[in-house]
Image 1: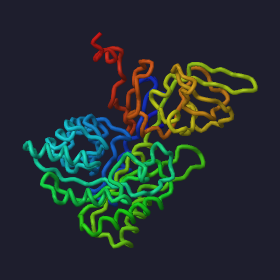
Image 2: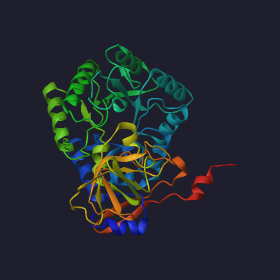
Image 3: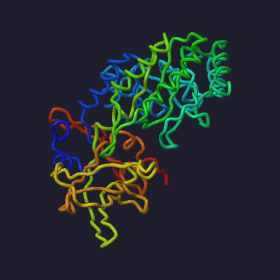
Length: 402
């Protein structure tokens, strides 16, 4: 049951694969963040974004972090006011920056000197000077996968503190008429379990920012979530307390902000698949192929991420069968769960659930092999509503001019 709705019924009504979200879970996580940081709690929409999600987050009092013109357009289409949006991105185009300024975004997080040049040109051409944060690279190891570690000095992101680039950027921004510098920003990575890493980053950023007396200090997001049995992670409330206690001990007077994404969305959703084939290889393994794969969840392929599995018809049944759950794509690497555990009586036509798929599934999905991207369903109080429809074959050819 998800949000009072039976997953077997959801699969029958909406088909599979399908992302299924517990709406109240999403709202509860947003409220945790807002309770600690108020208007300085910002949702990192790259984790999961659609118009319904943008509206939900805004209704719960969070701002929204967008990193491209596409994400910005979705948030605006959902009716989120520009001033409640924060524009991110390490290589924003002139068009994206112009779009952000014209939309009246609350903050632009500036990532490079080239971006400052672009803002100079846009303001010189007649646009209003935006309020900005400068993204710093604090030189802190996040102890996560190298592909999602962003706080170390060797990074494409931000102005590096240790090399003096950050100080140069602050001085330039303070002297510029093209931007209004209101603070600094740092983000050390994603899926971070060692919360002391956030404290280390805060110490670096706070010490750097103190001489400039800037009113805002944003420590980003990246709090890890548990995907498999045996993993444990801090809650948003626990993480927030650590950050606020650290800030207090350092004597930080600036407004502290956070940008959770995964920790808002991940555990709120499951993905439902239908079993299509079962291949038993004596002495080797059992393969269970489903009707999705790396196109709706590329995390196992990209990062070696692990997931649990269960059957929708018997979610608490003993899982004595060890198998590899794979997708339908033309890749041997197209696997969803490398070491899955399922009931021994799993059969073709069964609905398999992979939990904790609310972050970076829908947002990183693709049309590989021209598969149709799955729909998204929100469930609350026994009501299942479609918020993103399944693509159609007509959608696939819509932009193909032949």
